[in-house]
Amino acid sequence: MQTYSYFLLGVFLAIPWILIFYFKKNLRRRMLIASTIGAPFAFINSWFRIDYWNPPELFFFHIMSIEDILFAFTTTGISVTIFDALFTEKQVQTEKSRTTLSYIFIPIIILSFFFLHNYLGINSMFMWAIPMIFLAIVVVIMRNDLFIPSLFSAILSMLIAIPIYIILFNYISPDYWDKYWYLNGTVYDTSILGNVPLMELLWYFSWGCFSGVMYDFARGTKKIPNKLWKKITNI
Image 1 (cartoon, rainbow, N blue to C red):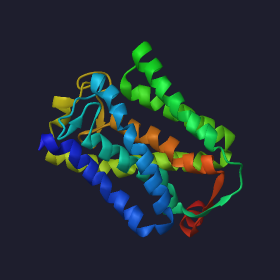
Image 2: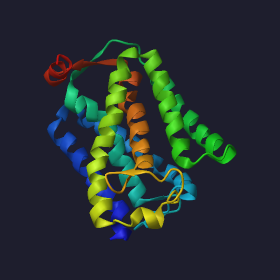
Image 3: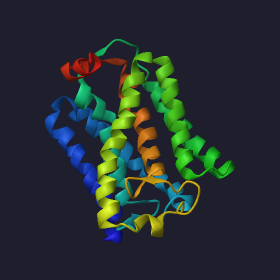
Image 4: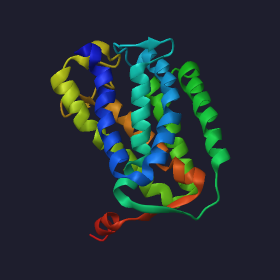
């Protein structure tokens, strides 16, 4: 099953993606756009294969695999919409659009990868997390109202991943990380709930806190809380 484990990770992540898409019609367009934009960035896993992991894959196309594409597609769609799916009634235009600045973030991220990993020699997981969290902070400084959505999107992304990792790496492929994870036996080899590496959760947290608020930042929209959020915050 180890050959299929990375593919199964994407399949399992497709379940919450499909649930959000099915039940939240108002988020479908945004979800499809976000996932479609995110999928090609699967090539970033080329860095991870150098010093983070080397997973067996079913179909590999030069710089990315079908697993990379599925993973990028599902995680992007989930992280961009998970907060709104649970806690937002609607979004209204209250700020100026920052679409151009949002697109500028893309080359900044890519250049930071080269600098942090290729020049400074930082492990690819930190290479990924540092610019994501940094840019999320930049966004929150410019839009204070996005702090809570950023934080909750990060936490919710992790919470979605945890049960999937428990099932996949505790029961289906329990020795997966021992074989394909370069950080096994290093100072970063720390897991919770069995075989759920904290470094993996760092990926979901950093991506969630950044991508979870980029739509509102780019479009200049503000989240109007729904009844569930009002009930929670009034406790």
